[in-house]
Image (cartoon, rainbow, N blue to C red; front, side):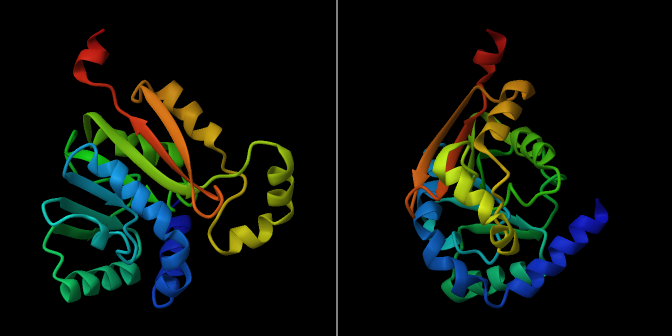
Length: 217
């Protein structure tokens, strides 16, 4: 597992200088949708896989944003953005493994993970960690490409799987995997998914943690 994490860290360190040029425009609509969803839960938000900080400018000044990422190269870029744009609402940027979040239980109103969950070696462990640090009634927000379950799109994705993998997207990771985890975990009471630009290629998935009252019932 440590070898996989080292490989991912080195790969994204190399990507860091050109990441914004490749992904900024393409992912902007899904990022904005994810940010709006997170803010509907409150102002204290954790960004898991904050990367170069592309989403940080989309949060209002009254928010409290905490960003973590595995790649030091990505975090350097994020810190440069924070300083250049004076993003005082960003309270912390730190190197951290998504499967071992260094925060107390129920610390955040929402946890956002954008274009991350299909890359994590143990996605179910990462989701469990996100749920742990999320307050009751809050939401995990995932923005990602998820493979089609069936039909023509699924067939096309299977043909293009090699290309997708090289640019960091998985065609094998389906929404049903997240739904199955949510049902089995007992930590999530509702899952919804919304298509995002371009043409539903990305989805924004919302997973709501039960309130204390719901758990008692």
